[in-house]
Amino acid sequence: MKVFSGIQPSGAVHIGNYFGALKQWADMSRKEECIYCLVDYHALTSVRDPALIRTYTTEALKDLIAIGIDPDRSVLFKQSDVSEHTELAWIFNCLITVPFLMQAHAYKDKVAKGLEANAGLFTYPALMAADILLYDTDIVPVGKDQQQHVEYAREIAAKFNAAYGQTFKEPHEKILETVAVVPGTDGKKMSKSYGNTIPLFASKDEIKSAVMGIVTDSGGDIPVNVYNIHKLFKNDSDLAALYEANKGNYKASKEALIEDIELIVSPMRERRANISDSDVARILQEGSDKARTQASAKITDVKRKIGVAL
Image 1 (cartoon, one colour):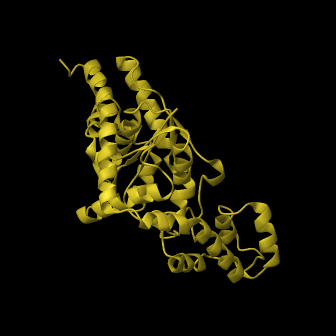
Image 2: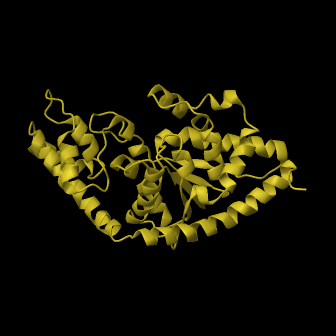
Image 3: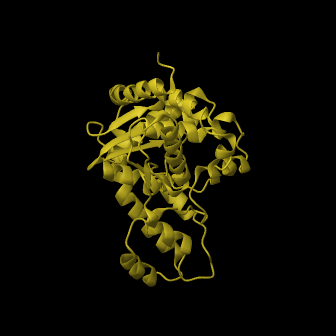
């Protein structure tokens, strides 16, 4: 089974990213043929600082290795290094319609939050479909918020196949329903846009600051927002005893959460600190070469079928 997914290098990853998608990536990378992409062209829809794009891209690759993805087993590469992605996206843009793209929930949500309604943001699903379909992907492990984009990819594959003959596999999303939406420190979905995250690779002091800032409901014995984050790190039976023993003591519950986060994060943080920028450059070069071999074969077939290859 072939697995593909992408991470947008547009800021520091948080525990919502980890439990919503990245932990799946690491688990699947030990069993399946996996291709993971740093989708830096997607990041241009919101990040306009070239230095930040470079920094975020380097940091994102370190994150993937730190969580346990072995670059010798999986293909790790940068979207902008494989031009077939944008080439195929243009072909898809000429096949799909504006009303089709107008159905995108993510576009509407981001514009509603004040993000500029640029054309790249609007046609984002076409580029994401190209990312996925270039590699004959079977499964796309994603968070719940990306489900519609995989549905878009599936529909675009079917539309192209109907027009030009069987070319693309129709991929399916894999979502861990138990963590489909990871709550933030304010009880809403954890998101950089809301400023309610707990950074995954922060120092212990930074994690402590974020956890102590979790909004609590003073009317209950159990701080619901704290508990909903805590159950990502421990099972319900263990937590039941802990929260029963600390009824009304929100500080104790938060301190226990800090220690449980640190137990998971500290080994990954240590592993990440040992990855150099030169390691990143080498891994991305090797990964791009592997990805380009597959992408080139697919785009050659596509160009022949649509008539631009003479």
